Image (cartoon, rainbow, N blue to C red; front, side, top):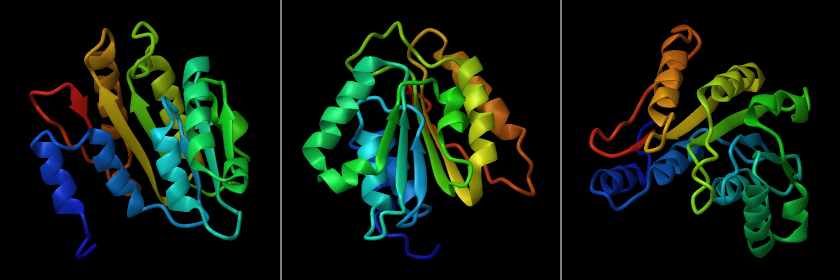
Length: 200
């Protein structure tokens, strides 16, 4: 892709501590996701990724769909509140939130959906109970599910926070999963700050 606007500013902002890893992820999404696509926020958190996805896929066709998953009631309530504040009723109708583990995404996304993005923000709910975290076992199951429902040319985006018990193990499990994907079918890359607990 020649001349990708905004890349330098976001990357340099991240490198110098002025931008979040999620902002880098959003920039990448914008160059993959198209209007009218179906996308999945596998870990809703406080809803900021869900909202960003909606803004990327929303068009006049009402074909697009945003599926949001989280096991925590607080996360879904926070996401719902953010969407209520930010969207008109028609847009909000096209966001479907589910109180389930991300490993079960295949159960809620219709089989005929052309999913172009599955995004993960692994760790714990910012501002929530830090004892409730994503775990390697369910994350690996969800990555397998994402791999099956993604359209060719689609993207699995993973931001991993390792600053909690089990976080480093989950990060290593994600690395191993990505490293084992077929070279012919997948391009896997990692952007890592070596002295900070956030990875993308």
